[in-house]
Image 1 (tube, helix red, strand yellow):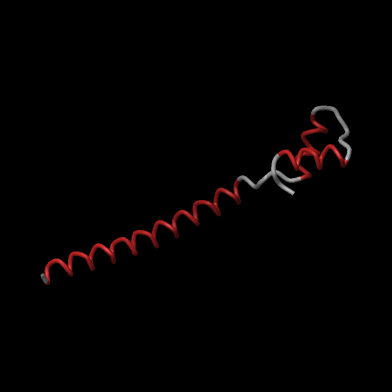
Image 2: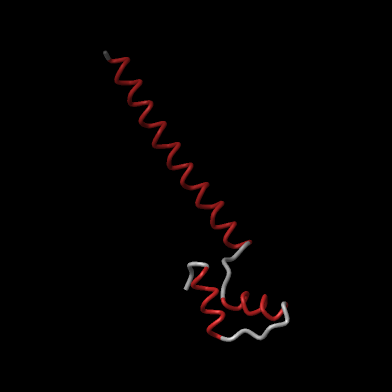
Length: 71
């Protein structure tokens, strides 16, 4: 019976350590990706419109931001 409980305890400890390490490395990777590829903002949308040869109005920029689900 003692062997069973030590196996269960080892499994639980292993799962906790694996979960903590997975969370840590996933968070670091996500932060690195956000730093390298920042989310789209109004300035970027304005630049895209200007590259297409259009002068965007504020309403157009707000509409694009809403359609992307950001504000």
